[in-house]
Image (tube, rainbow, N blue to C red; front, top):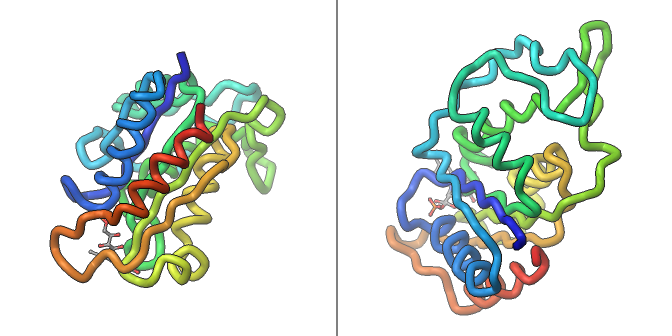
Amino acid sequence: MTKILAINGSYRNGGITDQIVETMVKALDEAGAEVETIYLRNYPIEFCLNCRECTQKPGEAPGKCVHDDGMQMLIEKIEQADGYIFASPTNFGSVTAIFKRFMERLVVYGYWPWGTNSPKDRKENTSKKKAIVISSCAAPGIMGRFLFSTHKQLKMTAKTVGADTVGTLFTGLVSNEPHHKISHSVEKKAKQLVTKLM
Ligand SMILES: Cc1cc2nc3c(=O)[nH]c(=O)nc-3n(C[C@H](O)[C@H](O)[C@H](O)COP(=O)(O)O)c2cc1C
């Protein structure tokens, strides 16, 4: 059975990100996948300390972080998944702070011993998994996708864990009312996109 892990960096219960991710999860479930959603707003993750303990030993497996928190379990889930949904609203031109905090903890996916200027991607030569990236913004979607860093950051997250981004859903003009409902066309696109993960 295909295992999909959805990581949701929205702060809002029932907001745009939740609606899109939940539409995808339902479609995946109906297609026979095993899906789990992690809501980062409820998940215990400490900030990266930039100590780079986790980056010193070579190998394809993620390094070991000095923190003892929810991230250990999350890394296991990431390793076991066949595909991913990475989702975050756009706040001040980037992913949310909770998504960024999660992203920085993915430094365990880099081999970066002291004395080298940049990390080597541990998953560089492994066979690629698949990821779909989701974001929303108040600006028109097309502007948001190309002007803001969100899309680039979500794709970087996918690459870091060894996945190619096979689909993007960037929804704009979401802030005209407090409880915006996703349109039928967004819902349709969300359902269509998940077939790329199966
Ligand atoms: C603190 C904050 C910063 C935001 N920054 C931007 C921004 O830079 N560009 C933009 O188009 N929308 C921005 N927005 C609008 C959000 O992207 C929008 O509310 C979000 O996509 C809704 O997602 P959610 O329903 O999952 O919360 C911002 C909203 C907040 C609250």
